[in-house]
Amino acid sequence: MPSEVIKSKDGTIEYWVEGKKHRTDGPAIQYADGSFAYYVKGKRHRLDGPAVQSSTGYFAYYVKGKIHRTDGPAVQYADGSFSYYVEGKLHRTDGPAIQKADGSFEYWVEGELHRTNGPAVQEADGSFQYWVEGKPFTEADFIKHYLEKEASSKIATFEELDSILENFSESGKELLRSSLTSRVQEKIQSFWGHLGVE
Image (cartoon, rainbow, N blue to C red; front, side):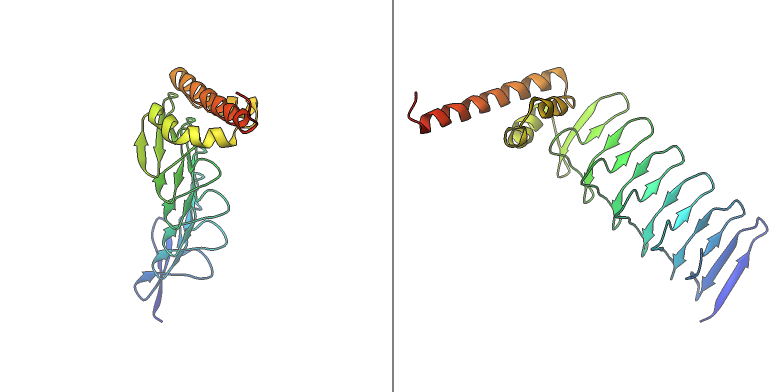
């Protein structure tokens, strides 16, 4: 296998094999400031740590050329912002896939904006966006079509209800409260009906 090590005047060192960046025992690119990038057969790749890391604090995990990590954020920026990716797609099921230093966040599942128990996007100014399986919803439609189904079957305590209500505007909170109240009343009437009480 013809291999080549290229050293630049600025201190950068690159490892090449058969015309592609390639190295299996260390980074294929090393910069003078300590930044590095791992490549295997021309694709960013590393299994035991970030494939790309800069001296500024940025890092990114890659496997076979795709941004990928299953045990933490795949990308982290110097300002503390981070992104979760699995096989090149934004993806996280236990929290936001994107969290920015300004407090904004985005929930993504398999490359689509998606969240069924609150806003999928919160902007730095506090505004919300509701998305399910990559489709946008108004707050009212989101509550009617998704959250009331989730909430009516899962909310067991007032504390759980309060934590969900934090994610909505005042009109959204009122809509959800009235929807849940009517559903609870229906369940109570159904219960009494089974007992033969009117």
